[in-house]
Image (cartoon, rainbow, N blue to C red):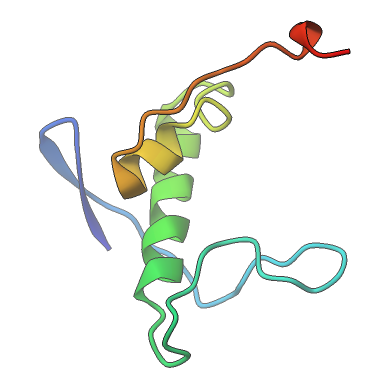
Length: 82
């Protein structure tokens, strides 16, 4: 897959395996249409690329959600909740 990140194109190779949790549920988003796999492939490529070039905190910072949706995330400290 060819991704555009920070103004340059990068090539990321992904396989056809699907990440699942302990209950067998898929961990990456899928399209509403069962035959479309582009959302899964795009998300896998993005996560793979960002995990290699970013710091360990980049994955949990909302960067993936921002890249996929444009939605800006907000970190809320858990110490505010009782």
